[in-house]
Length: 317
Image (cartoon, rainbow, N blue to C red):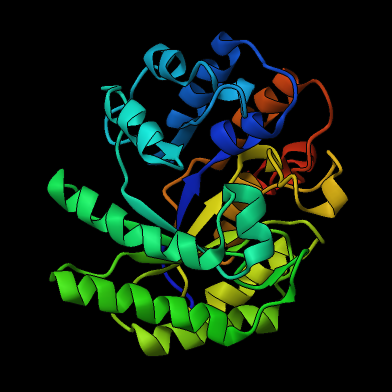
């Protein structure tokens, strides 16, 4: 238990992950208001929107306007997702966007081709160009995401070597350019992870790059989200992506059903940490209010548990 961190950081992805997944284009005013509520919780990083093709993702067509509509709070980083250079340039042109340079990798061709129309090897090789682009712009690489790091609905089990080979590639590319290692996120994109595999893969990555901070992007597709977070905490992981009220999902999980679970739920995982005596810097009551507002916007019950049951504070005070 000595490896459990004293403080954990949650990167909030609900405004982007959640509303991008929905088929309804919800009013900009409401989405901006949700971001503002999240800004008031103590979360210091909120992913607001994606800069992607409006034909492919019409719900993100107003990303620029959404950033302009939020009320920035000092100390909060408002980030965006991009998948190509056009999206990056669009994000860079919006003054309210905090650029967080990242690399994207895939362990399987099946998922990579469906998500990017390129093989996993082609996506890996493209990341060298991104490294050079970021350096030309004077931007420091922040993170590297390894998608389907635990398993893939199209190609099945993912061997540990598929993950570690990418970690070695990242290490070698950064070393060759004389830059520091980024945060390395293992993404359970379609819900294959289990607690023992969390420990196994986190441990293997840590052995290769002990100086790198490891993060996890977990989905609760098959109900193991909280168990996987606990296993990661036991391994000393202190960085997680999460989504308020459990917003979002993956179109390639759960056989493509709209009910496929989204990221681990921010307020539920904050509650878990607080009950374990781990600091998060987050006001849980305000976060629960934000989750309830997200549910009000969506207009149907969302996956979060604490937002419906309440925390234990009401019984302790």
